[in-house]
Figure 1 (cartoon, helix red, strand yellow):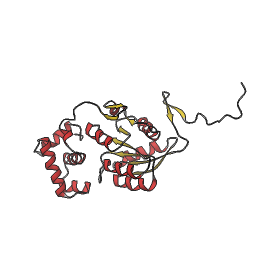
Figure 2 (figure 1 turned 180 degrees about the vertical axis):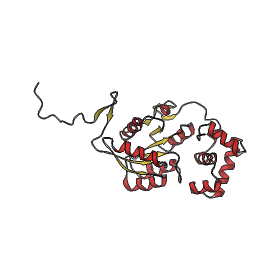
Figure 3 (figure 1 turned 90 degrees about the horizontal axis):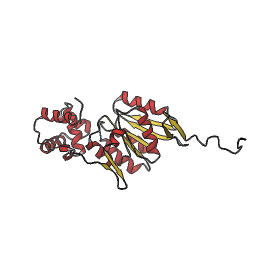
Figure 4 (figure 1 turned 90 degrees about the vertical axis):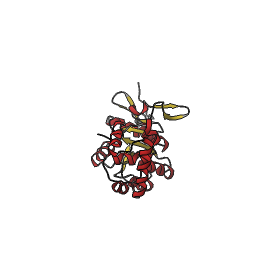
Length: 244
């Protein structure tokens, strides 16, 4: 058969098989990506892995949510990947600011924790994705591509806990237990308490007053009916909010 001289040689460039199982969406315009994670090794690994992918341009990788916000406002990325646990403003607050001020920006959360309360907070912040750090590297790559293409971008372990229908995306039935009584900010304070930080240290990390941290601590203990810091730490570990 004669070749069509008018055929576009790049016609199939946007559908390149990934792992032999799934066609991976690679747009003609590069996906502009910002990464934020306070662990330098993790941040560097994501930056290197995603930076070599076809169709993805890593604009920067930052150590705090504050830096992610500042640079997102300047660089106008298409996708922002935020680690949930970073110093300064919470990742959820950062996500809300970015979505409100960077038109079209898509948010993906990264975390070693997949507790329902965090997933719920991510959805409330307008995230289109949530990827467990226990996932294979290609899951994060596909999440960036899916988010940029206007699709949902949840790793399998997170997606299994969601209901996705015509009403949108929400957590399925299943108890949050007492953790559901805590606000996102209180959960962050609880995690720092469980990690052994003093209230003054927590205040510095979260940019709060010591008095505010003390108030959060009181609210946490009242909500959980746990009034001993050691018991509070054990409960947080059992709930998967911190690592043992």
